[in-house]
Image (cartoon, rainbow, N blue to C red; front, side):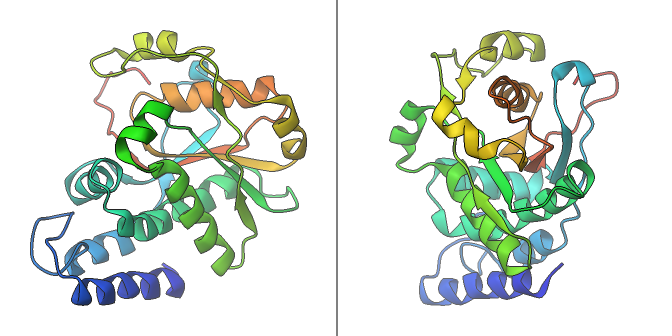
Length: 240
């Protein structure tokens, strides 16, 4: 783990000394991100997250399994507005981006373009912030601090409404999302020929990332890789 990652985690800890609260990861004392949860995030090691090729996903890496403290931190940031967690979670996402881009675009010159999977407008309004855009920006800042040129390109747009994904099977999610995202033509041109990395906070079935990848390919700017903070572990025999 790089020195900026550790230093940034300590900065978050200093804020917690001034504004004490319960840890969002474990519920213990020590601020919004306690020393134990900071250490767990600092130990993340991005790994490949295999999905079936039929889903249309590029090379996909996740920083950590979805569970325990990582799950609690993601939920606190996304649903409870724990905005200071964006920075350390963004560093975890940056670790996954490094691994994914090394496999997907090792020789593509220029800055990495991080394309976040967009949240629905109604969800952004309800939460009061766009959690994935915030994480993508934090990841890009960490990548730049470590010497890798990167910027965020929020080019994906919702082309039609979709049903709530809760309770849907993997196949139903894919059907629900197919054709739901698009890239406006004027936003696609600067991405062509560049190293585009799709980013999201979590991968479950892979349906959202697959639809985002389809939309980018349709616009002529296919992603070279995808990266997430966490991945839901797949059970034996479970489809992608």
